[in-house]
Amino acid sequence: MNNPTPQPDRPQPRRPSPQVPSGSVRASDAEREAVVELLRIASVEGRLTFAELTERTEAAYGAVTRGELEKITADLPGVGAPGAEPAPALQTRRFTAVMGDARERIVGRIEEELNALSVMGSVVLDLRDAQVPRGEVSIVATAVMGDVKIIVPDGVEVRMGGYAVMGDRRVRTRRPEPGHTVPVVHVRAQSVMGDIEIVDDEHHAPIRRAFTTWWEDRRSRP
Image (cartoon, rainbow, N blue to C red; front, side, top):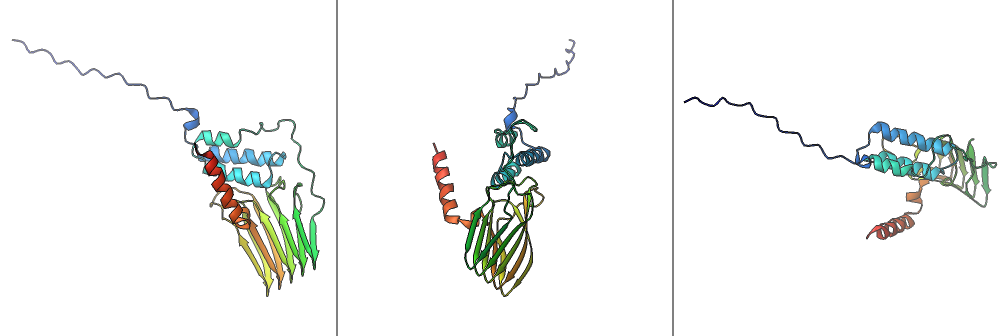
């Protein structure tokens, strides 16, 4: 009796892999950097404030999928689209308080160095609504027996130099992640028996920010 000739195993048909939606594909570092560059260009065109630029830049670096990156730029047109009208250039670049108070919420376009001088007074500069085309702001802050406070958006990098003689100069901001390209605020602090402080939104109004975060989280719940 003849034994049957063994037949080679037939390859099993490969099942097609399920299609992953484009928005669910994990984003690469190069794609994140490309979105950050688009945000920078949008800022140059006057479409984003300083606070919006830093907030979206931080979100871009924290994005996991392509869909999350697309949401960050969903309301921005393509590069060079018509209709871009930058805010008028800031005309006043020197802010002074002598035995008094000066509070300025800057909304213009910052292209040159700012100066803040306090002599037995108080100067507060809020940069969150300004437009910063170059992504950098330079400030000379001088406090003589007075106070200077500069409010910056969350997520910026602050680089402070200068001196303090019987005074104080300090930065209270959340440090950005190393290697991330974020907006920069350069401060040359000169304090003589005075106080110079750089704070971000998180440290400027922590209670208000905590309430806002709680309220937004509550509204997002089903």
